[in-house]
Length: 313
Image (cartoon, rainbow, N blue to C red):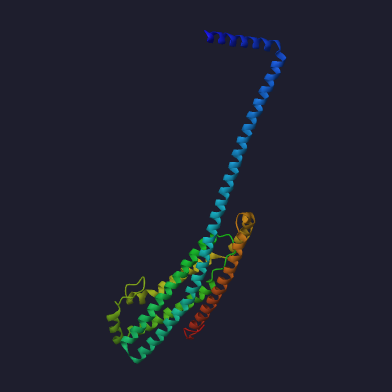
């Protein structure tokens, strides 16, 4: 029975409290308003904290995304720069080798003429085989330069900075075309003269199916017939590649690179990387220029019938 008494007492207190609330309504109303205001203030404060936390989290996310984007950008720039340097260096080396190969062709043709005049059949065709082989090797180097040009073009399209010029220009290609055409023509004339001689022609028939360890040709006869046309085609392709490079794009990329450097300098040590690039740029440009001058000098010698030593600088 005690719980009944407790319940009745509680009900009585509630009724009494309600009575007091109605009796002193102005105090109850004031307290109610104050309570509502306090509750609203706490709710608003809680919502503001949640919004600030979400905003801060979004800022951190955006900063992380931006750093990652800049990191990927810098990595891509480094890859492009490495490809540019590799293309410039490899093309300069290959271009230097081409006139050396052509010079070896000329020396073998000199020997072939001597063999022909002396009437020695087998040594004559040995010299021709060596000349064809060297001419094929020159053609391979020209194709390597063309490949380097393609890689260089692709890399500079995406690189935003100072760009070293491609070491093989239109003038160099023109000299290369003239020298190789003269050499190929001379070889055809020598071979044609030998084929008009019954004894030399007989030896040729025995050896024309000899295999050559060069790509693209099955035998000596095919190489002799097609190497002149093939090397001319390779040079034409190279001329088109070099012609498409142009020059204004280098200045444009340099301006864009300077702008981006200012925007992203606080997110990475771009200035230091640019100084390193400049140092590599100057070294590569200097070496490529020296190789080009050496190669052009040799091409001039070949065109004018001079035969300097292969060891000459």
